[in-house]
Length: 228
Image (tube, rainbow, N blue to C red):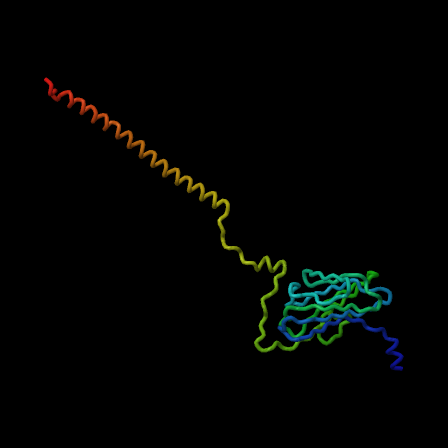
C-alpha cells in the first residue's frame, strides 16, 4: 500500500544550491545550482536568479552552464538564457562568489522558464516552521572563521558612480581664460605705465634742452671776440 502511494505521488521538482565552502565570509566560493525538470514536453530556456543581501552582481562569475547559454547580470542578480534543453533534463550551472555574507543562511530566489512558456517560481522564503510549496533554494552557512573580515564591495554600475572619489579640482577653461585676461591686463598696464613715463620724460627734457641752448647763445654773443 505504501509503495503504491509513493508511486502515485507526483515527483516534487525543486531548485537547489550547494557550496564547496558553506561558511560565512568565505571567499571565492563555488556555488552549484540545480533546477529539476518538471515538464515532460518542454525544456528549460532560462533561469533567473535573485541574489541574497550581501552578494552583488559584481561579486559573481560564471563557471559552468548548459552549452550555448549566455550569462547576464541584472539589477538584483543574474540570468542564464539559451537553447531549450531536452524535456526532463535538469538545468545545472555553477558560479563563483567573491565572498559569502556574514549570515546563518542565504536564499536565492529562482525563476525558471520553459520552451512552452511555462514559468516556475521558486521564490518563497523560509517562514517559521511552515513548509513552503515553492521554496527558494537556501544555503545554510557555518559561522565565520576566526579573524575573517568582509572584503570591500565589488563595484556595480551604481556603486562605481557613487564610490568613485571626485577628482581633485582642476583648472577649468573659464579659469584659464580669466587668468589669461588678468595677465594680459597686467602686461598692458605695465607697458602703458612704461610708455607714459617715457613720454613724460621726453616732454620734460625738451624745454630743458631748449633753455640750455638759448643760454649758450646769449652767453656766446655777450662774450668779446678775441679778434677785436
